[in-house]
Length: 370
Image (cartoon, rainbow, N blue to C red; front, side):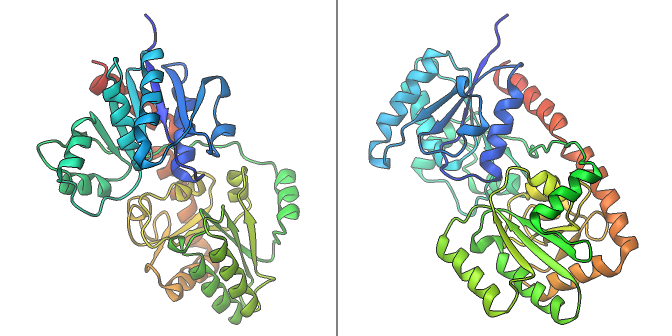
C-alpha cells in the first residue's frame, strides 16, 4: 500500500517558532507519509528542509493570487496530494483556491499558531473555513477563540494539539566551557537568555529595564538576546537604550543562532516577556534543557508555566515584576532547583515531540484519511 502524500505549506518570509515548527513537522512526517514542502521563493526555511522534497513557490500580490494558486493546484495534482497542512494563517486563501482549482481536492488542515481576536462570520471567511477540514490550535485558549469567532455553520472540527519539542543531547562539561567562552558567559554572573524575534511585542525592553535595576542593587546579572531583528530601527533603539543606561557590559545581542538549545544549557534562566504570546515554544525548549523559565502571565504561557512549580510568572509589561522574579530565582536556590526539575518532567510529559507527532499522525488518519 502506497503512502499518502502531504503538502506542508508555509510561505511566510520570516524565521521564527511557527516556521521552524513547520520544518520540524515536515521532517518528522517523512516515513509515515510522502511529504512535500511548499515555501516561498524568498523563504529562509530552505536550509531546514530536504531540498529534494521542497518546492519554492513564487508569491504574487493579492491581486494575482490566482496565478500562485494555479501553480499550487498543479503541484497538488502532480503528486496526488491527500492532505495540505497549513501553518501560516495568511496562506489560507492561497491554499483554498489551490484546492478548488485542483482535480485531487485534498483535505486542508491548519495548525493555528496565532490568536484570533475578531469575528470571521462574513461571506469571505465563511467561504474559506467551509473549505478547511480540521483546525489544530496550539493552545486551549486559541481553541476557545476559534469556537467563538468562526461561524458555527462552517467551523471545521477543532482539536487542540501542542507543538512538540525535541529532547536534545546534553553537552559535556568541556563543550559547555567552550560555548561559555565563545559567548562571553561568566560563571560569577546569573546569565539570562531571551530567544525570539527582535520586535516590540516580544518585550526585550522590559528585560533591559529589569537588568538596570538588578545591577543597581549590586546583583551580578547579564542578558543575552537571540533572534532576528524584524525592524532594524527597533533594534537600534534597544542598543541605544542599553548605551544610555551604561549597560553595554551587561547585555549582548547575538542575532539568530542555530544552536539555541545548546545555549539554554549554559544559561541560568530563560525569559519570555511577550505582551501576548500564543504559545511560547522557547519556554518548552528551555524547560527540556533543564533551564529555569520566567514568562509573562498572559496568553498560552499560562498553559506552560505553573507559577512557582515549574517556572515563574511575572505581570505582563511590568519590568519591576520581571526583575523581582529574576531576583527570586537568584536568591532562592532551593526554589530554582525545584522549578528546573518539575519543568523537565512537564516538558517530557506534555510537549515531547515524539508524543505530539504520534497524535498528529493519528489525527491525520482518523479525521482526514478514513
